[in-house]
Every structure is written in C-alpha cells, then in structure tokens.
Image 1 (tube, rainbow, N blue to C red):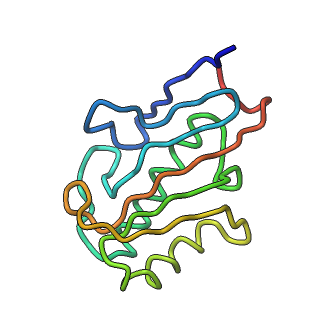
Image 2 (cartoon, rainbow, N blue to C red; image 1 turned 120 degrees about the vertical axis):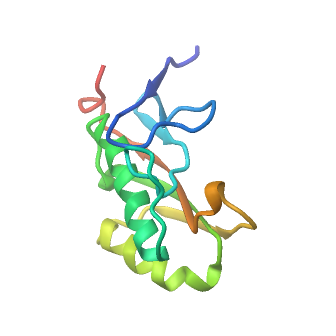
Length: 134
C-alpha cells in the first residue's frame, strides 16, 4: 500500500527555483525542501547570518501554515551553514523561533549554498490528522 503524495505550495514563501516542491505531505508527515533567505517575491535577503536565518524561518513558517501547522509540529530540522563559525549567531535566532520546543536537528557546514547564501534549512513536521488540509 502506498501513501498519496500532496504537493504543498504557498505564495507566502518563495516559489521553487528548480524542479522541486516547497513541501510534500505524505499522510500527516510534511517534508519541506530547503529554504534559503529569499522573500516571497523572490528577493534575496543579503545581510548577516541573523537576518538570513530570520527570513529562512519566516519562509518555513509560511510553508507549515499552508497545511495548518506550526513550528511546534516540527520533529526534525537539517541546517546547512556556509561557516560553522557563525553557529552561535545562527543558533540565537533559531532558538528564538522554537522556544522551548526542541526538535531533533543536524547542522553541517557546507562548501557552497544556492545563490551563495549563508544558511539553508529544511524540516520535517508531524501534523495532526485533523489539521491536514485537503
């Protein structure tokens, strides 16, 4: 038995810049593509790791909201940083969004990210069956 896939898209987050979806819903599990610091209109946020992290998390919140979910529904994040020396600055912004909710997380330094940004984040969320939008 296979689950049906639902492609999730919202104009409140930047459109995909390649052949992928903003997110895919399988049952009650939402898997997002990596978000970089683009505004919903596609404008690149150039600035500090803090400014870019704010935009990335704003985008992820919008994708979650498209399915009636919130950051408290996140079970796992994967963070890609251009420079691990910026981890503390990144982490302070990240913590301000998640508060006491602490999903599992992996953080890795990478050689390069799309559009040469400083941070990219993807996540997995478990959404209650009552919340999943048809």
